[in-house]
Amino acid sequence: MRFGKLVHYYPLFLKGIGVTIYLSFIALILGFIVGLLFALMRLSKHKILRAISQIYVEVIRDTPIVVQLMIAYFVLPKVFDFHYPDIFHMSEAFTCGAMVMFLNSGAYVAEIIRGGIQSIDKGQTEASRSLGLGYWPTMRYVIIPQAIKNILPALANEFISLVKESSIMYFIGIKDIMSMANTVKNNMYSATEPYLFAALLYFVITFTLSKLVGRFEKKLNV
Image 1: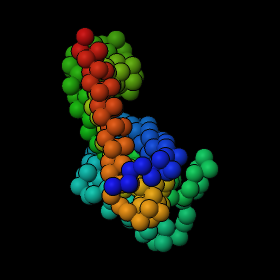
Image 2: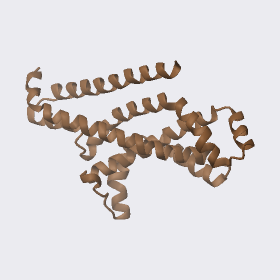
Image 3: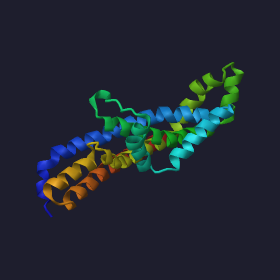
Image 4: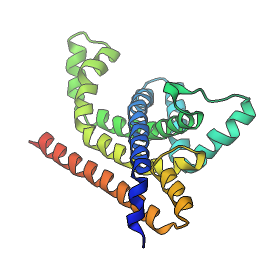
């Protein structure tokens, strides 16, 4: 094996690491916002809102993310005749990939948040109502802050999953770790070294995040 030759390609891999983490972070933040919205819709008393939320969650969770990515990048622009915008000087593919990832993550986050909200004692809601707070102020100031504290470890684990799931984004040309490994493979005429090194990078990132999440959970327990 010629792992020594990978030294010349470290800048490419560093760039890929940056893109992977950046993409995952955007997906986590926007996914949390989407997930919170659909979680509240799922808990709403309005049947239409509950139905929309349930359909969204079921469709996203019951279809592979790679299929969602292919449809979003290759099918939707042709069917509806549009192009994804270049946001923050990133490519059209990056915008599409980020959208797919945060919509996919949002479905899982919605269930995490819903579970967190339902885990809060109903007495909290009753006490808030007795003080004159309506439904939305109760959710905003009393229930959601407590639920968020309970689900933070689960959200951190979702971020770890996003890092690993981002590896499929090279299919549409996003310059992430896997894309850079593929470039190095073509330059070296060998797949062994770059792909093993890419696996090592993903392992180091996710292992580090897992340890940080573990320490964070211990602090919350204390």
